[in-house]
Length: 183
Image (cartoon, rainbow, N blue to C red):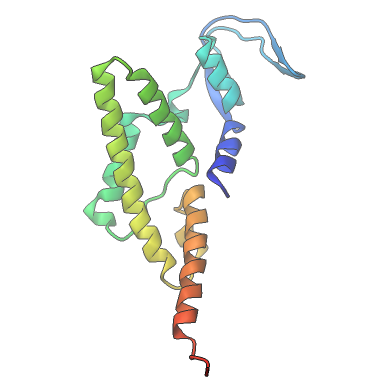
C-alpha cells in the first residue's frame, strides 16, 4: 500500500470532535453534517474534522492526535535497551498522525522560536524512531518469513516495506546460491 493510499484511508476514518460553538447543518456536495451544539461530542471523518477545526467550529479530541508527550513515549520505548531487537506496537495510524503533527508544528513555528524548538525536537525524535524501526524491519525481512504475531506490531507503511524487503532479499539469496550455468 502506498503512503498516498494510507493517507487517503486515514483522511476518511472517523474521529471524535468536541463542538466549540453552535452551528447549523452544513451541506457539501450531497454530504450533510451537523447541526452542531456547543459542548457535545460527535464522530466525523478526519478530513471533515480538520476543516471544522480550521473554522473554529470544533476541536479534534486530543486522544485522536499525536503530541510531543506521546511522541516522546514512543521514542523512549522504541530506542530503549529492553527493546533493542524487538519492535514495539505502533498504532496502525502512527505515520499519518506523525505527518500531520509535524506539518502542524512546522506551520505553527513560523516566527515563534519556542514552537520552532518543539518542531525540531519532534523531527529528531521522529527520525530516531524511524531509524530504530527500520533497522529492526530490515533484520526481520532478512530472516525466515515472520509470523502474523510478529508482524502485528508493524504500522501499515512498515508492513508494506517489510514485504518488499523480504521478497527482494529472498530473491537475492536464491540467485546468489544458485548453481552457475555452463557457458
